[in-house]
Amino acid sequence: MSTYDVAVIGSGPGGYVAAIRCAQLGMKTAIIEKYSTLGGTCLNVGCIPSKALLDSSHHYEHAVKHFADHGIEIPGDVKINLEKMIARKQAVVDQTTGGVDFLMKKNKIERYEGIGSFKDSTHVNITKSDNSVETIEAKNIIIATGSKPSSLPFITIDKKRVITSTQALKLKEVPKHLVIIGGGVIGLELGQVYRRLGAEVSVVEYMDRIIPGMDKALSRELQKVMKKQGVKFYTSHKVTGVKATAKQVTITADDKKGNPVEFKGDYCLVSVGRHPYTDGLNTEAAGVKLTDRGQVEVNDHLQTSVSNIYAIGDVVKGAMLAHKAEEEGVFVAETLAGQKPHIDYNLIPGVVYTWPEVAAVGKTEEELKEAGVKYKSGQFPFRALGRSRASADLDGFVKILADETTDEVLGVHMVGARCADLIAEAVTAMEFRASAEDISRMSHAHPTFTEAIKEAALAATDNRPLHV
Ligand SMILES: Cc1cc2nc3c(=O)[nH]c(=O)nc-3n(C[C@H](O)[C@H](O)[C@H](O)COP(=O)(O)OP(=O)(O)OC[C@H]3O[C@@H](n4cnc5c(N)ncnc54)[C@H](O)[C@@H]3O)c2cc1C
Image (cartoon, rainbow, N blue to C red; front, side, top):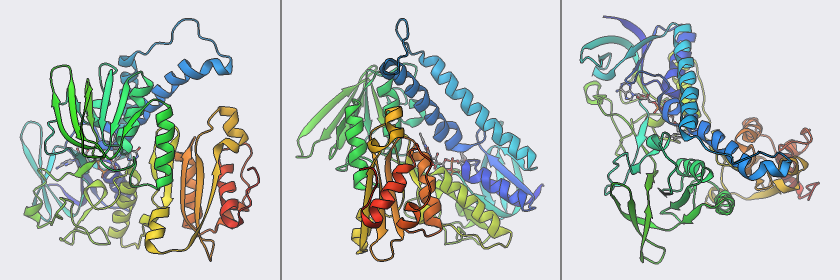
């Protein structure tokens, strides 16, 4: 039987990063993945393919709607070749998952293909595609089995007309009318892809606003801009039923006033969140406890109820984000090596890759109010920047929330062009506990979108932005 210092179950961004860090720290490491490609949800059916389609559809929309403004004329019609677009997305995925293969080999991490399930607290059975079972032994085991799309009890996901994000990433036609249940990140990103490609898109959301976990100002601005782009929103609508025929889906809901309404589309994307995935893991055999919500229960060291078994990423509490999973993978590896790592969960940024992009870190205005923290707020609109005018990306703003007394930055919330990248400045500043004035006194290259951060900081410090 092969023996290891560490066995990692699951090869998503949590698992493969944990394995690399364990190997870097000199541990003999194995990784077990049930699918034939590494990289988990993120690389195969999540972050990477969705961004590839967002980029492709963005190019198409620019070509159709905006090239002419730049003096670029295309003789004849611009056409979509969806099959090619999806094939390009798959090529990006293949290249990226292949990169993880390379990293496993480079770091001498032993790879096992099959379903990992606990035999006991130090042994994992690996069931392969031919049903043979191999058992390995490991001093420490990291559970990184991720999550799967959730649904509602009365919805049957037939994967043809009623679909999850996984099928939405490989449709064979552009929907005529895509009805999306859920106005969260995944629904909005995929909704924008198909809206750009010509679909009518309706978003039906139970809460009174889209991206409900984020600062209210971001929800308002994104909804306003996406509405201008043609997406229809039905907030405060409670979906009550979904019925599919061969070519049509009917979604029933109760509107704000409790009146029944109906949506008819050719596809219905169910994006109501994701749930932790532990099927087949046989956690009981090792004595690993789960929470009521099906997550693997962990303490502050990401240690489960069994001291040599850890769990990270989507399968444990916290934001379901790839970079959160990665941080936790590194955290556990360094803990196993006897180090004292640290994660500040308050400083894990959240991003929506629509255009305009949405990004945030730290506390929202609603959270500060609820906690009774006295704060100042400074906001700056992108439309006042030369860089925004040059690229015609005028929507959105940066909002900085700072402590009223100390001026320490408590939260940064932005919607606009390239915010997914801009948020890194806010994370850095907050990691070093910068004040709004610190940011306002740093030189920001001109012309760049980052100038909106400096200006918002000036507005938060003592209400003296330079360009509005
Ligand atoms: C459409 C979409 C877009 C997204 N976009 C973003 C984004 O832009 N940015 C972002 O930060 N996050 C994004 N996410 C979320 C992100 O994908 C997850 O947060 C991330 O993948 C979680 O990583 P993980 O390692 O915990 O689990 P996963 O990536 O889910 O990986 C778990 C792996 O474990 C394997 N596994 C499960 N059980 C077993 C078993 N018993 N034996 C062997 N293998 C097993 C699974 O096959 C899987 O490969 C997106 C998700 C979706 C669906």
